[in-house]
Length: 90
Image (cartoon, rainbow, N blue to C red; front, side):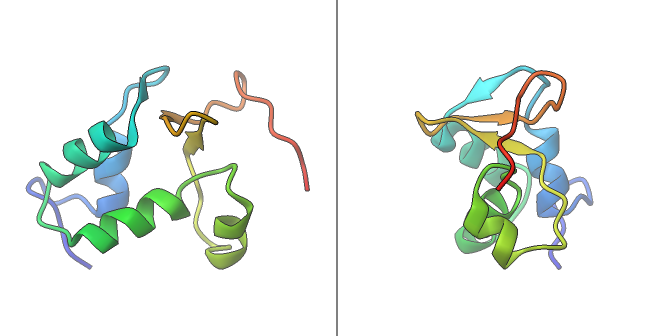
């Protein structure tokens, strides 16, 4: 798996691109991750789907991935905080 400019994985680069409580657009998050490494666009897209806690198809497709992103209804992203965000169980 490819590594970023500082040796991190794409997943780690995504996590390191956000501060707790910060809400960003898809475009901004994608730009931040793109600047951290030379991953293919599809690699970043798939990670951004796989790491979303509230995207049921992703949870079924990538069951062993531990997600940490919350996707808001307006398409913005935030680090998931279980103390702040209530999740509806399926």
